[in-house]
Length: 228
Image (cartoon, rainbow, N blue to C red):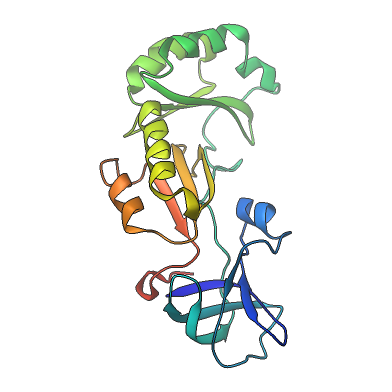
């Protein structure tokens, strides 16, 4: 098994501490509460980012090999101001979140509409919609937002997102560090979770759902899954 983080050791023990990038860095880099005991030859690479490979016993990584470097856990790439450069924008965010727009969203939410966001690009603010039924969302929102609307197709509904989150929580509550939902770089509204490791029960629980609905980031992962 493989994990990355900050290695800390004293005369009695060694622990690998969870560290992240982006959103996960903001959540976890200021705490040393999440750690994995490490058993193996002593290393000079303490108090810096390392990659640890070894055998997971269920409580510790043993027969550990420690190498310098590695990346912290990370959420999927998220939307930026450069994600949709061709969409027209308005100067004021409130124009996108007018009450008539919100009311219109409510009529199609939990059906055609998965989620709606006032997003910002270089041209200003625009409405970003994740939609199971793109035409229905456009028919409802284009009369209100005109060219200040961008609709992205979704292969899953808002109900499925909630169901997947509930299934994950029931299957692996003890392994979950973070569970939420957000917008990826393609404008899709997706669930995401950070877990200690992926258990067989979690894999079975998520199997019925569309493959990309839930982004699962595991701190401790199989060696063949080591992409960081």
